Image (tube, rainbow, N blue to C red; front, side):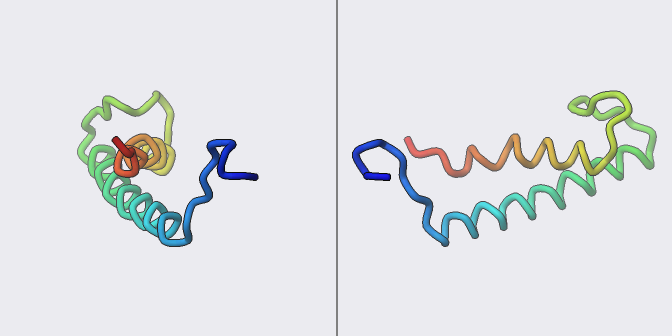
Length: 71
């Protein structure tokens, strides 16, 4: 694809940074989801019947892209 088409190739560094941030955010949200499950607190962002893994994954992929927005 040419640069004129508007599609930019991500560098290896950007992909690595994205994966590291997703991993960090996922870990953080997973710990929070497990904690809420163990203390019988409600998770506002979780759908009924959703596992801790699914909740953490959804939250991480919902938050991390904002770190890469270019203004």
